[in-house]
Image (cartoon, rainbow, N blue to C red):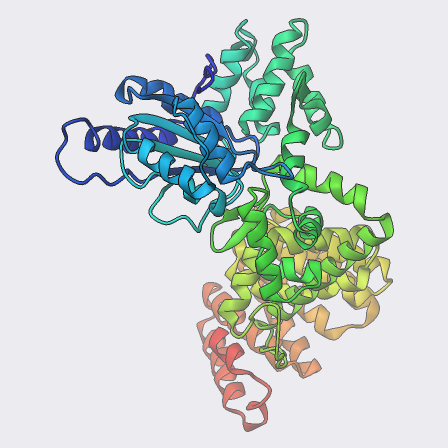
Length: 580
C-alpha cells in the first residue's frame, strides 16, 4: 500500500497542477458507466535528480485523489538502483498479491496476462517507484482499464511511448523557505531571513538536502540558522553536514553514481573541474579527450541518470550539490597529478580558443587557419563572439587561473586578442579585471611596451565600463610614461589617443584636440596606417567640437586620401574600413 505522505509537504505547485490535471482526466474518462474506449489512460513518468522528491510528489498525488480511485492506492518499489532491480515477473506477482488474486501454477507469460486482465477492472492508483529502465516498466503498463500509473525514476525513460512526463527540479526560493519554515517551526526562519536564504541556497533548493538541513536545525534548538549556514558554506564538508539519521544526501547520489558505466563515471568526475556554471559539448569533449559523438553519448547517459541537467542554448550544468559530489569522487579516484593535467588541458584549450575567437575582430588576423575537425566552429565573427559570450564564465576563470600561477605571456596574449571585441561587448563586466591582470603580467615580464599597451586598454575599461574617469586618466598617463621610457612610438600614439578621448568625454575639448593631433603625428611617424586612421577620425570630431571646422575638414580629407592611396590597399583590411 502507499505509505503515509509527509505532513509538512509544501510547494511543487506547477508540478502538482500538471499531475492533478492528468489524474482528473483519467478519473473522468475511466469512470464506471463512462461510454467510449476501454483503453488505459496514459501513464505519467515523474523524473528528476536524486533527492528531488519524486516519490514524495507521487504519494501526495495519490493521497489527493484517493476517493477518485476506489480500487485503492499501491506503491511498488522497482529497486531500480540496486544490482538486481525487481524483474517484471516479480513485480507482477507482488501486485497480484496486493490485489488478492490467487496465482496458480502458471508461467510468467500467463501471469502477465492475468495481471493485465486484473488491472483492467481495478480502479486504482499505481505508483511504480524507482524504475530502472523502459524494459522493466513496459510490461507493467495496463493495456486497458481505470488504473492511473505514475512511474518515478531518476531517468527520463525516453523509450516509453505514449506517456506524459513531469520533470521535478530544484524548488523555488519561496518553496524552499516554506519547507524550512514548516520543519523548523519555532520562528527562527522568520527571525533570520538572510540566514534562512543562505541555507536554502547552499542546499541548492534540493528537497532532500533541505529536509536534512531543516532536521538538523529542528533538533538543535540552541543553534541559530546562521550557524547552520556557516557550516554549510564549507564546500569541502557540505555533503558531510547534510546527513541526519538515515537521511544522507551523499547516499542518494552514490546510488546513481555506482550504476554508471566506467566512461560516464569518469566524465562525471572530470566535469567537476569545469570552472563556470554551465558548459558546452565541445568543452566536455576536450576535458575527457573524447570525440564529440562519444562525449555526447556520455553526457546523455549522465542526463538519463539524473546526474546532470540541461541549460539554455544546448548547454549542460550540474546541480550545485552534485558538483560537490563529483568533485569528491574526483579527489578519491584521480591523483593530484592527473587532476592537474586535466585542468591544464582544459585551461589551455579555453584560452587558445579565446585567442582564436578574439582575433576574428583584429584587423591583422581575422579568420583562423583551416582546421579539418575543430571541437567548436569559429567560421565567422558572429560565431566567434557567440562562443566568447557563451563560454565567458569558463575562459575567464581559466584566464584568472593563468594569472594566478604566473602564466604571464599567455595572460597578455589572451587580453590582447579579445580586446578587439570590447566595443561589441562593453557591459560584460570583466574588462577592468582583465586589463588590471594583463598590465600586471606585462610588468612581471619586464616589458614596458607590453605593460603600456594594457595600461591603455585598462584606461578604456575604467571609463567605458565603470565611469572611473580619474583612474582612467592615471592609467593612460602611466601608459604614455612607459612608452616614452621604452621609446615605443606606437604606444605613445595610442596613449595620446586615449587621453584625447578621455578629455573629450568630460568636455575638455582643447586638451583633447591637442592629444589626438599628437597621436596622428606619432602614428604617421611610425607608419601605422590603422592607428593613423583611428586617430584621424577622433580628430575630426574633436576639432569640430573645438570650433576648428577647417582643420576638421582638412583632417577628414586626409582620411579619404589615405584610404584611396594604392599603397594602403592591402594595409587596411575590409573589417577596418567598415570600422572607420
